[in-house]
Image 1 (cartoon, rainbow, N blue to C red):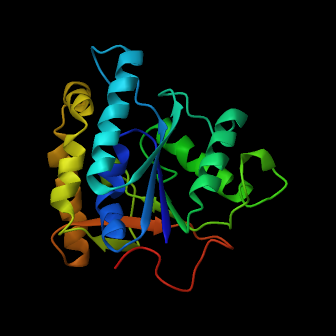
Image 2: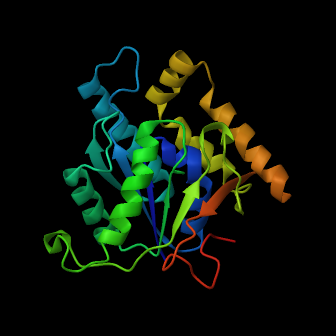
Length: 235
């Protein structure tokens, strides 16, 4: 299968679904990772344009560790807008390029507007991309793709209906997350949290819920044409 994770900021993939994507890759699937926002506002001291470049390098280093194919929509932080035609065009082009069998993205009730707008953008673009006469210059139309929503920040207001055991993938997930040095400092300074420790706590909680050491939780988009008669997430 071809897997497309569309996450907002350059470290969100590792936090929300990194272990699951590693498992997909280990099972022989092709994994594409798209960062919608470029992370240019995520620091107390480094200025936006310099930070944009730093975070792009951090993201590439992380994805290279797992053999993921990295794509950036390069939209500025705090400006993600599902109603923006230019951003919609970018997302349609990315989906048509990746031709995914499944998309993983943020929950539509996550903690910040950029995450929520990313979720909305993926929902719209993934259907629009299936219509061959809509923006045909952006590539060949795709099938209407199943969508899975990843856990929210700290697991707030999110009840998983499906779990992926990431116990064996946890070590690599944390190494990849550690590549995002600039964001680790931002989260410590801005939110007072240790990002490695926080994600480990959530993975342990989800693991307890499904009987393993560490897990990631998801919910599917329940809608016509989005369902499949088989498990899409990795065993």
